[in-house]
Length: 424
Image (tube, rainbow, N blue to C red; front, side):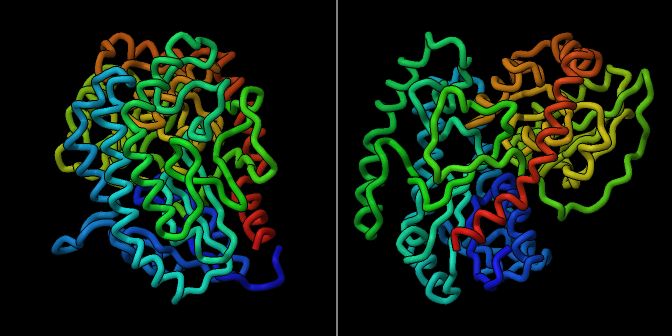
């Protein structure tokens, strides 16, 4: 533990996964007496100060009238572009993945002056970014810079791991070359333009076709039991956090109990995926036909989602308090939910929607920690069979439970806090 009290500036992506990850690490640092400031996106106003952090927020686009829900921009973006998720991942590169990068880059450029003001005002000893795009103000501040990768570690690329965003198997390279070529074709002009802007702000050039560079310290969130360490070598600046499970969630009392014939399952498509109301309704209609009970995270459009009689749900739920009390998880495959489910030793049924979710779902399936389904083409029977499989396969459940015990023993939150203190 550092004897000197530090000022640590966090800038997470405006989504629940990265922000919750930073909340978990920041809370440990705050408890140790450090000053923790969040330069989060403006829609998080009041939500971080309520947890004991300072807020010095940024807009990533011209402000809209009235208050917005946290991360509202990305919820709207996902809702409006959801039809793209029905395409093969290689076809999404031009029509969905690139537009996401374009939006992220637009936000990075827009908030550059504001970030410079925040850094001048806050005077941090260390800066921590959990995002996928570079903010030059953060890397030119003259203080140590920490990069956190809380998406799938395939974002840290290598020649012997499957292409990020592809959802392709690790042991079948047949599609890798075509996917990488299409990524290059669709993204190189955008990368060249962004890299030129980054350099013009006084930052170092970005690595080829990368939209963010490594930091003085680099942390990535993914359990050793599922990592690609035998296929990808990282230098000494990189450290794995087997999990990063925040300790700030409220307690939760399940409204029903697990029995031999009726298990409890947590169902969440994340704050963004749950905005696809038709998909939520489809899954709910199938699960209503099973004998099990479900705790459902309904998300931002909760008023449009009606639950069946064997379900309890709400717009927001304290996920990390719920997971220890359920028998399995149905998830979109977001990295936070996947690593948290593994942390608590829970098998998964995965319905990936976008970005790294395809890669996470594929990894859980190929390692036998869960079952990946085609999110928009699954049959009623296939979903019921997947649920039955993760509830009754003794070997699968034993392996996931053993992985969870190992992950919990690593204490990723405090490891991250120690490393950040040591860097500063």
